[in-house]
Length: 119
Image (cartoon, rainbow, N blue to C red; front, side, top):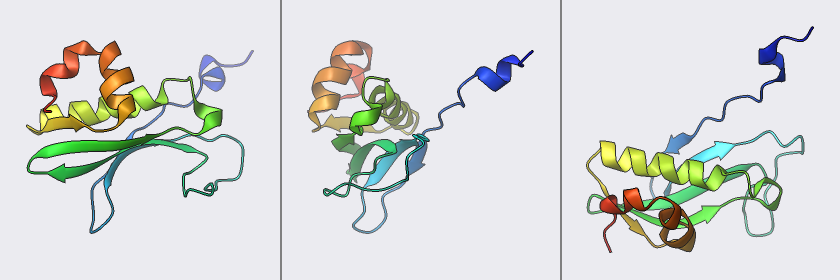
């Protein structure tokens, strides 16, 4: 018989990529979709979900969330945004949700996290 661990999906790991130079910070999860890793005509990856932010005066200004069509509806955007909120709280930062996913969809489902929001 097949061992249980062989049937389980691999754990998803959210990576924190810190801002560097002109590049924004990102909380990102990469998913093996079975397809070749590539970017679309807008430069967006086909195998990553992420929330991008700028650190401005001790605040995480979240300005963009991306999930490729093939990965939507799996809770990946919520996963990366939640990780960003946890990191911000742990490091004494506030959140400025400029991205509509964060300000509308995510915070509507997680009103308990509104305590970390500025603006």
